[in-house]
Image (tube, rainbow, N blue to C red; front, side):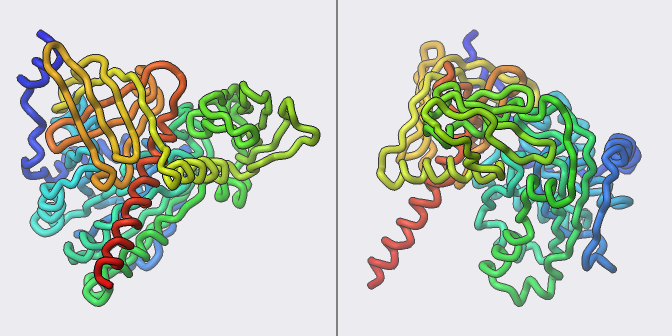
Length: 432
């Protein structure tokens, strides 16, 4: 039986099943799994305006590493919560996550069912709903784009809105190098809105305040707080995010080893210091003076974003890759479908292939996705992009080395921004 035939036969994850209020007998387990880890990192929780705030409320959390969930558990003690979790988080542990209060979501899909689930948790179960709206671990230690629908949802729910902005989690285990470091961590737990304040605020004002609350920069926090990370291989994997050389502009020829990152094309190298800054240590082949383009690591990432934006504004952005596709219809197992072609262009995503004797095609227009989810070395199978419908999630693994899933992620965000701005201008023009 071919992979696509197996996929057709699989029962999909039941997204409509009512969420379970976290079982009381699982509360001690969550504490046992969380507190030793956060104590090891000397977690400090700063609560601001939280006097008298009790469940139910919506907790908005930054998302940097797996330890986020443990910090959240510690911050909410002794209360329990329900969590929105991606489909792959349920893999081989659906019973446990459901009974721990987990609510399944396929990333970057417009899922009305999720709103019903969240309202059920808040209004019927009257507990806390923890949401990580960035929907993926931070790639470079700074905040990701948030959906515009967040403010509308917050206003609709009519419960207190609380922010949990965590610090140091990314530094302890960045998504491009999961080896754990033992740096200290903090969390700021802040009341953003009472129900009464939500009534008076506009959706635009709510979105603006939430976006401000989500602002963070892990490398700046590290430097400001003198957080020393002396792990010898602290830069290994950084080239997954910093894929374009800022000196010669060559893409996909960056490499990293130990505490250094370098360009194979122009031979320039930089060292990542124990305080998380970069300094050039080897000149490029055409360089007369040693200069450091971006001492602050996130600035390099934003430089890459600007380069992608320029391609989009010229109308020339296009990525075409041979890929291998796995599907995840439920929480049981991945199903290998086979080889296909992924195109990411000015029109959005197009995934096309023939699996068995069946033609397959998935289209995701630009304005259907404000961002996309990527993974580095996902389950040891390589870097991937995942694209979802309401019933299936496809994990797409590009073949070869002339690509960067980071660039595809940046392009998804910039294409959405570019076309959204164009649509607004077109509407204004039509009105006049």
